Image (cartoon, rainbow, N blue to C red; front, side, top):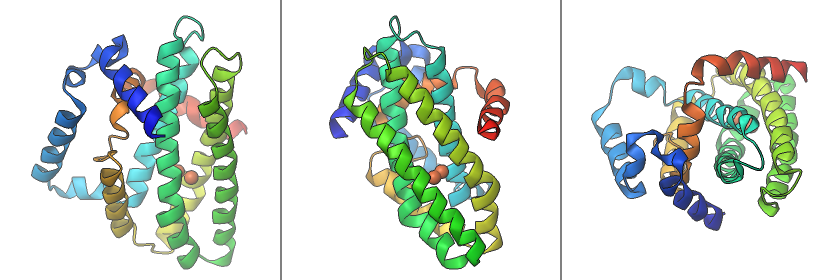
Length: 232
Ligand SMILES: [Fe+2]
Ligand SMILES: [Fe+2]
């Protein structure tokens, strides 16, 4: 994982994808420090609402969904490097996200929810395990492998299905069970910061992939993603 992170960071600062935003010319430490000062100076109530666990996890969902969508548009031969960058960042973000859910959010929901809703946690854990297997496969593959892009697409389909279940069932169940989403949100932020993925911005190496993924895709993403997830 750390090696992949380094590779992704290197690419994001040198590839064409990294130049789509002015911030990409800054070093990762400069980016980090500017994110930190931004979070220090903004203490509005809307900010604190956006930092509860459900909001933070939902922000992660949107970010990886954009990456899956972006990867599908790439040509696996001509855009191999860009594809690899997106795959690496998405896998890194998903690994962190699933770990945070398993360590913080799921146990809190399991402890607070009614018996029927506890099955949701069991199912979600099984879905995480399937996603992790695909992530492990991708980490062993190169973009030159015929099935690299297809494997990432299948991972995206699994993840979209899982996201639907979390957002339509688990998050409402957590609200109903009065899970302390604010304090879990704080723990999520602390763990992300400690892992160098702070301020909701994901991995340091993700700027290039994120710039790609963010480029003009906000409006077109959500409906398609929901449709994909609902089909499953
Ligand atoms: Fe999630
Ligand atoms: Fe999950």
